[in-house]
Amino acid sequence: MLMGRPGFRQAVARYCEKMIEPAPPGWPVRKLLNQLGRYYAGYMLIRQYYAWAGGSGATPTLSLLQAHSGLSPRQTTTFVATLKAGQLLEVETVAGDRRARVLKPLPRLVREIGRSCLAFVAAYDEVIDGGPALAPPVDARPDILGRMIHLSADRVLETGTVIAPFPTVRAMAGYDCGYPLLVAVMASYYRRRAGLVGPALAYSALAERFQISQSHVGNVFAYLRQAGALERAGSEETVTAVLVAEFEAWCAAEMAHYARLVAPLVASARA
Image (cartoon, rainbow, N blue to C red; front, side, top):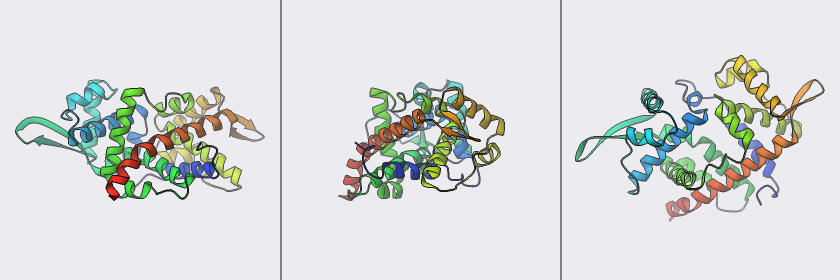
């Protein structure tokens, strides 16, 4: 339904531009989270905290996260220590139980984990023109974003990930900064369709933008070629129709997923 609406591709193009904006200066939080394993661990950390805060989950301790993060126990411990060092996470004690150490995600972590989620909600608002806008209240209140992530993670645990049916998107997300590289490729495609000029897809420019090496960019692009997602068009490479179809279906699925979850939260907040 979303893909057939006027303005769908323009909304997807704006989503792409939002997602490839340069990272803020300072500690490289975006580089840390732009890999599916670490992103999922952060997602589950937020889910566990908001489930507990809402009275429906166990105490969000390190051991609980180690059991559900998807990382090894040692990797999870290192990940949590890194989040603490980056001031993205606090460890608190529970009243009445000084031994329980609660992992509390700070608003910056919720916003970074939820950055793509919020951008998809904004894209949904754009496509469903005339409906009540969902993105502004979510953007203004990290607690709504955190609760949306909690509900999304519950759905993932019940029925599986939204990304699973999209093999190229899933594979790219597994690389360090692979998903933003894919989005940069798609953003370039949409710019060319619109007759616009944007940031170059040169390896050096992409490496600088996403704080990775040029050789890593080359490896990711090599995967896209092998997967049949890129093809030669004259002197340039461009995306194939197969990749466009997969990426747009992925965007529609994410837009619908998050809009469905957040609409009741926004309505409750407004009430």
